[in-house]
Amino acid sequence: MTEWRKSSRSNTESNCVELAFRPGVIAVRDSKNPDGPVLRFPMVSGGTFLNRLKQA
Image 1: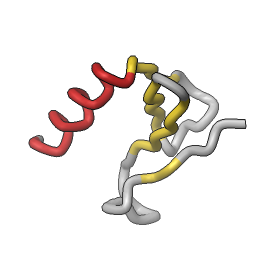
Image 2: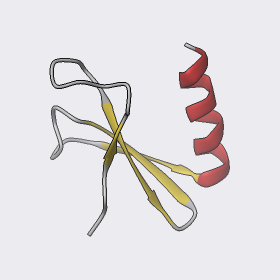
Image 3: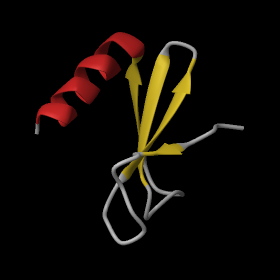
Image 4: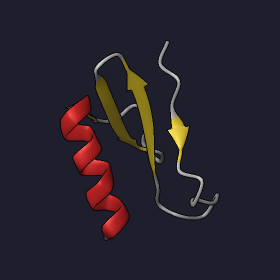
């Protein structure tokens, strides 16, 4: 079972994403739609993706 983590900056009324870390992969999904699509990034690409999100 995948353990999803919500951003520490999110609250119950905001749009946010959840992350899951698996060996070699970072998965990202919309917290409002947990059964919806999941983006999966190789760990190296996922790190770049997360850093770009922090800069936005």
